Length: 123
Image (cartoon, rainbow, N blue to C red; front, top):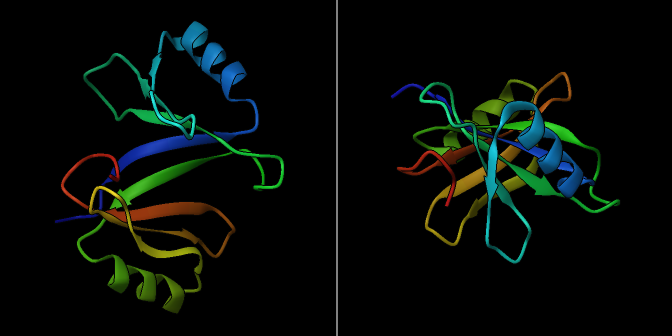
């Protein structure tokens, strides 16, 4: 298997404002019923990938777009990323749905997440 980009998310301190903005601009449909406020974004297209909007608090960094890349072995990819100059910002962890994920910052400071699991979104 390759390492495809399977999902994206927008981290923001203004989730309601951005949900309304992207819904009005592109017609994206937002949905989510979870205690953390995560909203799935359905682009309404058979092409590309869907994503989501993740609310962050004022002390959780800055707004950004983050890609989720599916890999076969999270631990091996974390080590390889570190060997190549990346920095782990969220260590490898098991998610409630059984998938594994980690968040890495590349040598240019751009964060991305890697995960292993069968779905298009880490569970």
